[in-house]
Length: 185
Image 1 (cartoon, helix red, strand yellow):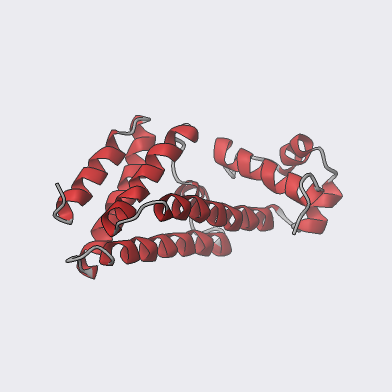
Image 2 (image 1 turned 90 degrees about the vertical axis):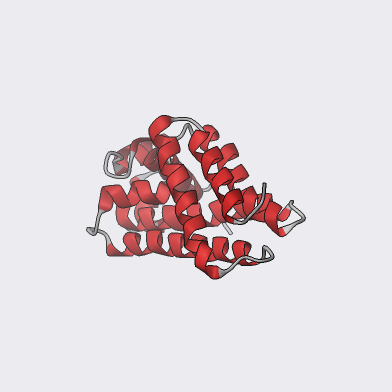
């Protein structure tokens, strides 16, 4: 486990902020190193390349993102509340992130298929999310797996449209639509 403030952690934290704020392709290694206050040798001894740093960023982002969403979901008692809590998570997170959207989709938009390992990390995140939403939905009495992808698409669409409009109405609309889908007033 890395100690707070060590070069590896500084590089990763700085890269994560910069990749999300200004984009992966627009962020140079020299900027990461300068803002992290570490030597170039630290980057290559811990990550080897910008691509490896990008992979570490995506893995760390997935871990943190799922820790946040599951913490919010687990506070709820009923299966319906737990399912709808994923949208509460978005309502909390999106404004805090200045409506910059999904880190994974943003990365994929930049790299396309030029970085297969990073592309796989994006896919793994989305697979895990889809499975998680599926589990939450089928825990609701009377719901079937057939509706799970609809919930997933509503969730993903809410993130994208909130980025476009820089507002929460897409999340609120998606949440209302899920309520209707599962037969809840």
